Amino acid sequence: MWNSEKYLQYSDAQTRAFEDLSARIDARDPRRVVDLGCGPGDLTAALSRRWPQALVSGIDSSPAMVAKAREHGVQAELGDIREWSPSADTDVLLCHTAIHWVPEHPKLISSWLNDLPDGSWFGMCSPDDAGDGIHSLVEEVADRPHWRELISDCVLRLGEVMRPPDEYYDLLEQKGFRPEVWQSRHWRCLHGDDALLNDLEAAPLRPIRARLDDEKWEAFRAEFAPLLRQEYPQHTDGTTRFSTRMLFVVGHRAQ
Image (cartoon, rainbow, N blue to C red):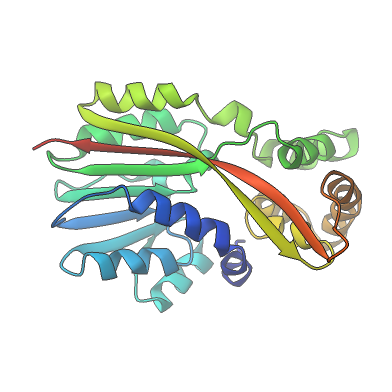
């Protein structure tokens, strides 16, 4: 179960990436705007303010997230993006920090691009720091013999899921979109004891938390936390500093 309140506390990095992505979408008068993996809807609501004439909607697989999005005034629906397809009037399609949860996403993107109309825009962003300290530490603990059968299959393994940037570029170009692909690194500074662990619980560690009961979750945290503290030590001022790299993919199909 995704915790919408904790996710919103994690929203600084989410907001930065969303703003960077949506700023490159130059749609003038879109009819329909869809946010796949809309989460609690606070960022989707910003799309309604930007394009007040458009029908803006969100899709998310979490009932808690959909409920929170509706509180933000978003027309949110419960659904799996694997089973979704755009309608003929979808002029802007965004998938913000959700696509990396779907291993087969290149095939999905290809299908969406086929269905989008002339003049439409597609945009996605995703974590792209496979092999960094955080992901390596999660995999290290999850692959230990006493955890492997319980949680190894629900660990986010970016190195196995995300494709090289040029593959996304080629995919958009092959579908008649003018592509723009870039990466950015965002440095963050968190405050308090185990601040990074608490931050990770909001999103990257949620599938593991959902798999484990309270006792096993505390046992996992007890093994993971010391590794995290060693790799990302707390500074004398009480802060923990780390960075995340994001991949952005934007495409526009000419009229």
